Image (cartoon, rainbow over all chains, first blue to last red; front, side, top):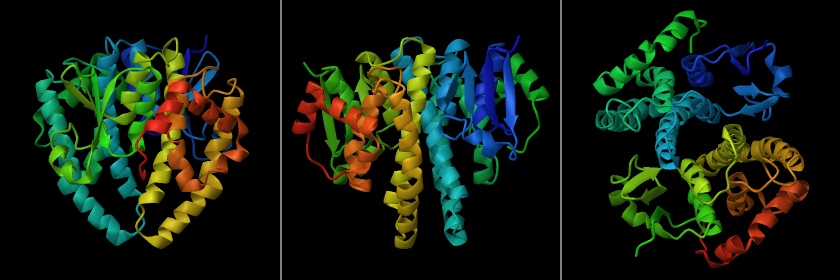
Length: 204
Length: 204
């Protein structure tokens, strides 16, 4: 019998990795579809808004990586206990995503001079601004990003923070022991450790 | 007695208007704080991540406009009945936000040549791409964006309408009759109509 869930994305960790972490953490079988660049143009039109990742379940499709992660978190017990707790998790995830989007915008800047300046600002100001505040939050939250316990916010940060190193030009968590410790803790959860060992090895 | 909620934002509709719509729809009292530009630098450092809007409730502060809306939607009962239904709403809201961010990027572009090009692409390609698909989705959902009934996705969509009209011109929606009818329906809800008449008239 086919798995209950099918997750389609490109052959990267990228925006789908949080969902993959959650599915593995919860021991939920899923079809981990990796679309090639050749296949994508034809498949694009079949996706709700021409984007990936897309989660399929019970004959229905839904896009949007963070929305998918929020849904899966509820299935595997990594969401909040009430609406305000979920807001706290959501707000941290959105904040980390804000940083990701700022860096992505720089990445796509075509003007080389402008890009150089933007990268410098990112490394010296933007990334430290966010990382310092996130570090404080983790220190005040029992080693986690929200609610003093493991939530999908911890998975989200762990899967995207590698990209921050690229823009920082080094280990952006070098001065953030609590965040570093959190990432390590997540990566060493048995189900996650196993997934990291078996998952396709891709550049990002 | 002070209202249970305080929403702080700049003096504009911007990304806070969806939350205001939800408060008004649900007849939930809130303090609608509008920060003047001159007062912002001092206040910025007191916010979680130097951004607005911020929602305050029970002595806690939280940022992130869409997550605030997701929380308020639960308070005013404009959510789905289960996790997948909520995923469907989330995915549509995130998609509309994707479009909003693209429009915002064009709006804030300083270089006149670049801005002209971005605007052309938006008007000729991006906006039609999104609105055609949202139109088709609304046609399949009894005139609502998701789940065949009013949800916070419809509030989110409609609250951005005034700003959208400013950017693209108010007759854009003539091509998308289902979406146009949806906007009109939401704007005609007594609480929303009253709010739109009473709210401060602002540039953005």
